[in-house]
Length: 395
Image (cartoon, rainbow, N blue to C red; front, side, top):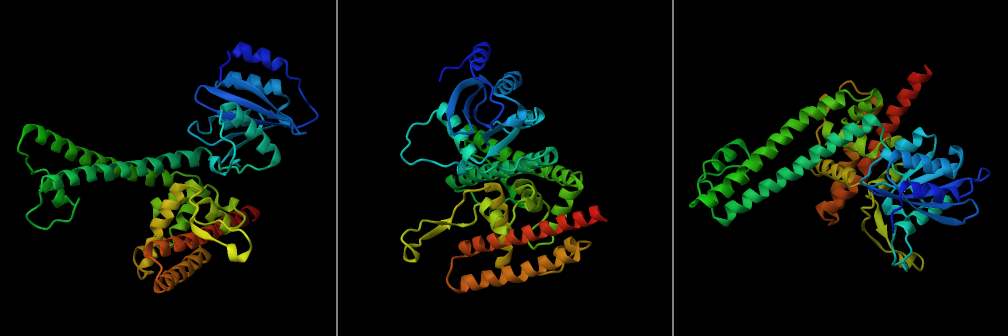
């Protein structure tokens, strides 16, 4: 699609009459430099307005031309451009919705995809109420989420660096003379003493070792910063993170990831909605009544970061759970109702895992079932924290 200059866009927009008696639904297909604009009126008629530069002044001029701020309903897909456009439109007093791309309705027979069509489809779906909004974090949530994801990226890079070094040692058949646990301090000390036959091989090996050391230091440096950021978070967010740690297998990193990735857990009316948001509900393709019901694996149509940490925490219920030691320390000072919910989760989830594996279900599938129920208990704890805040505000 041909990009238009700002002056050309303004002249084009002057041809559009301002409608003050009806609501206008605007779909934006946002890219780094350009934004495709589609408008759908209340009666269902839709029009493409071409593209505008992705600049604050150009966007503000566009919105003024389209009508009064209280008559506009704007939406765009969540993506790499973040929430800058959302915050700008909110400052202008315009209702804006950031929608989940994976939940936008698709037509199987439509094989043509352009920016213009995407903008028009967003405008029409927004008018029809077919779009699902994502959680837009505030400043505190966004800052903590960026730090959580930085740690996740560092762990991923560390794992890749370790795999490269491990495979290089395997290719050359180099092993320690005594049994050493991999990636411990003694093992890394032995790794640095290995010498290759040629200078080129030694350089490649030293580079692989240096990458492992660098990524390890990177992870170690992020974790204290993350704990400090949690302590400096707003009171309600900090209390939710502390309450979630009453659960077995949930420490500060897992609790912080759940809190910032799911956002306000109480925005979900029921626990199954949170489970669906994490993509932990079964997929289904049923037809023809009860006999035609077919269910598959989990949908995975949700927040992958949230799903990963909850499944990791659920592996703790594959072994007998204990309420003493670190778990008792994390529960100390928490609300008795929160501790009661955590204790109930501990008994139920362990029993659930044992029952499923006794039936012959593979361990990984049983843990996934436990993870879905664990999210329900997390939702219940968040509800309790919110209730406490309401009681304090009322008192």
